[in-house]
Image 1: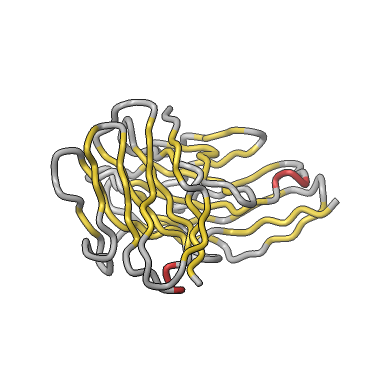
Image 2: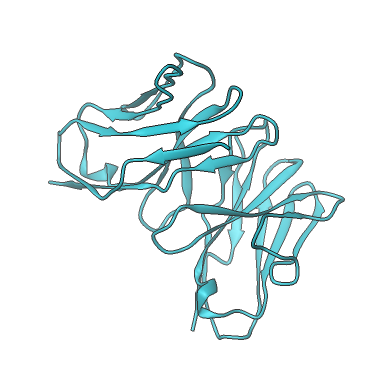
Length: 113
Length: 112
C-alpha cells in the first residue's frame, strides 16, 4: 500500500488567485495522478505526472490552468491558476505503486468565492 | 470504449437490511474491477477488488464477484450499519495505462 499526504486539506480562495496543492507519498512511485471531484460528481482525471517528464493532461485540462510539478518519485504539486467559482472542487492525488490499484490522498477541498 | 455504469442513488436503507449496489461495465481486454468508498468529508478508500473473472473481492462484510458473462461487479452486504453511509464508486482499470474508469458513484444512506 501507499500512504499519501495532501496539503492543504481545505482552503477558501478569492477569484483570480492561484493555489498550489502538495502531495507527498511515503514510497517511491513512478506514476502519480491528479483528479478533480466536483460537488456531487464522480472523479475526473486531470493529468498523469511522471517524474522527469512533462505531465500528460486529459481532454479539457491544460497546463496553463493546472501546472504540475514532479521533482522526485515521492512528491508532486498541482496548481489551480486564476481561480473561478467553477474550480470549487475536491482535488485528489493518487498513486498506483503496483499498477491497477489506486491509492488516494484525503483530498484538498477548495472553495472559490 | 471502456465505461462503468452504476445504479443511481441515493439508496436509503434501514440498519441491518441487505444491500445491493449494481455495477456493470464495458471493456476490451481483461480489466481489474474495484469498489471504492468515500465517507463524508474524507478521501477515497479502496473497499475491495477483483482482478479476473469469477474472483470475489471482500472486505468489511462487503462482497462483489467479477462476472464476465454478465459484465457485472455488484456490491453486496448482508446487514448494513449506519457507519456504512457513504458514497460508493465502481471502477475498472485499463491494463494498458493503469488509468481507472469511474462510475458516477452511489450515495448510500443507512437509517437507524
